[in-house]
Image (cartoon, rainbow, N blue to C red):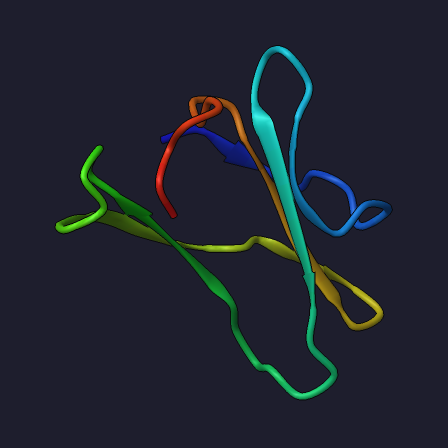
Length: 71
């Protein structure tokens, strides 16, 4: 799974046609992980830490996550 810093400017999951940026607010978290599940949402496939924090927003850009991916 290719992951880069992404951006903190838009909260939630944002698809741009090539990959998905994830950003979420937490004033107290010391780490945030994105959990990806199989197509039925039953089995966890991967757990990846969001690589960046800008003020209180954790964020990361996932090059291989497309619309419809359960998380």
